[in-house]
Image (cartoon, rainbow, N blue to C red; front, side, top):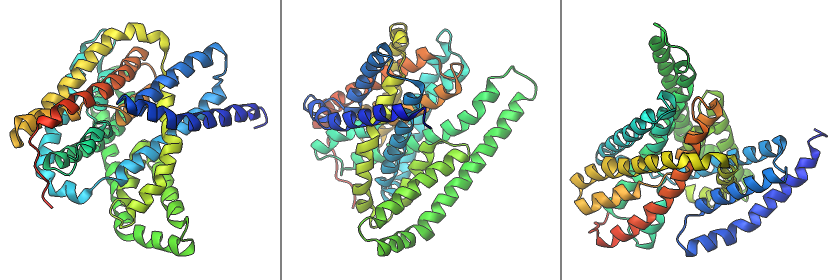
Length: 409
């Protein structure tokens, strides 16, 4: 503990600098219509270069930033789950499920094929890329929808529902793949398929148990416990109960073999039906503002700059597949259900990839270069940046021409 003490000063200085810079950075990027996460990843990339040149990024300092990034993941996905409207999702489940199945299948298949066929990649990197690409970062496009007052429309509701289903399925598939990848990486044998199948069944079974526990907590315990904490302390009782529960569910998911991202998202879903969810959301917003930026900064810090040049070709093909997959997978079924203009709009709105996309790739990186090679990781980060810039531009141009209909009350 004493040997690590000098890094505490650097860590606090880093946290203070980021906290002071984030507000003006977001304001500046907002003026030029660039998502804040793009600036944060680029900022992290610059810090990576400067830090390595100045020998600042020591292993202990890097581990501390990585921990802050994990807190950022938990806060971001808890809030994503908290803001989900389960009642609305269920009311549109038939249409949303049809679009979602097409979207996940097509977008994952297109990306899988291009990565699998790319020299030096293979099965496991292709699977990680495919699962990552099946997710959607709706928060990037929804800003344009909000500015146009179009969120409370039938198209807007469908978009939000499909995006939520995308994220849920991507996290589930990531958990299964994370357990299967080490098995698939060994030399082929007669019993390999059976072992992989057994592992997948066990993983899904544990996931069902985890979901059942989250549902039971939400249905029978959450409100009563929240009211109890609020009676004990009506100022911060609710916040501390939500924050403590969020961390415990995220930790439980990690200990059960899933990702903390899975736990955080389901923790948010468990609180989403509470009448006080808006109050909890305002409190959690502080944690998101404080820790969320470190996740995106850490992505930039973890990027190997020497890989960027040789990853440009792979980035171009991955970007093309990522865009095409959403336009076809989400756009075509939406066009059948609604109209061709609405289909284009929804498909374009699904193009951005950010939080879940990067979380899946980071999980692969944690296994080693055999799961996600440095070239693929670099291409994934560049693709993330590109989709977050392309998506809002296309949506901004398509939105005024779409004939949107108000959602049913």
